[in-house]
Amino acid sequence: MKITGNTSASTSKTGGRFTGKGLINVGIFTAIYFVVVFAVACLGFIPILMAAICGIIPLIAGIPYMLFLTRARKFGMITILGLLTGIIMFVAGMGYFSIATGLIFGLIADLIWKSGGYASASRAVLSHGVFSCWIIGNFLPFLITADTYLPTVRAQYGDAYVNELMTYLQPEMYPVLLVACFVAGIIGGFIGCAILKKHFDASKTRSTSTIKLACPIPGIRGLVARSAQSKSHHPKSIASLHRSNERVVVSS
Image (cartoon, rainbow, N blue to C red; front, side):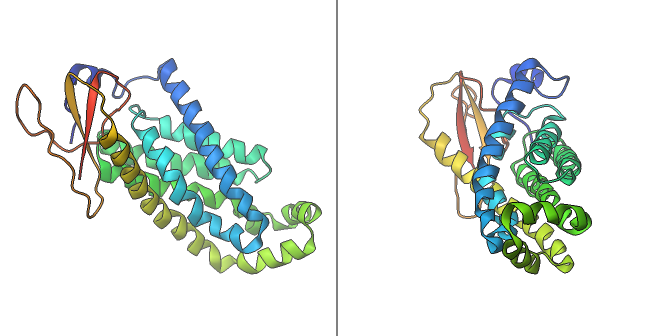
């Protein structure tokens, strides 16, 4: 799978070293991603919803993540996104485990995205599923460092909150939470693809070339992209959408 359209521009912006613009994109989307995480994390004030965060965050975060992938054309960008997200969680008082999980799952997600040539929609969805597993790091302090972490939580939220919360965070629940992160991440990836499809289908951007954005969502039938000059079919891909002189066509 590869990107069609402005081939020279696409090739020059795929792989290679980071540029200042690439780092700016990572920073912007880290901020957007954190806003989503923070908004959902507010549900954690209710103990039973605290555990449900593992499934809720990936469902919503799939939208900005998929948009981020349209800019993530160099290896390491997803890794940095995961690392920065983990650091922010640490600063917010969620413990240091999220730094490790953000780095590890961010790196794996990066490798998956790279293996698809920064163009495969199926790899993009899988990448988000794996990336979403970083969330488990927010819960590891309740399991690994409970003796030192729980007194802090009790001081902030009270004994009743902690006692009820720990009934949902038994050791045997952690594999379930991890699987929930992954499955919800896959679903969130499909949702992100669907949102992008609707957005770019509605776009009336005029272009001199055509890019085809593949989105493996059951029931969605896209358009077959044809160049005005060549009249030929373009291969499926998830393409960079930041060039203003290109028209985006989405297909399944």
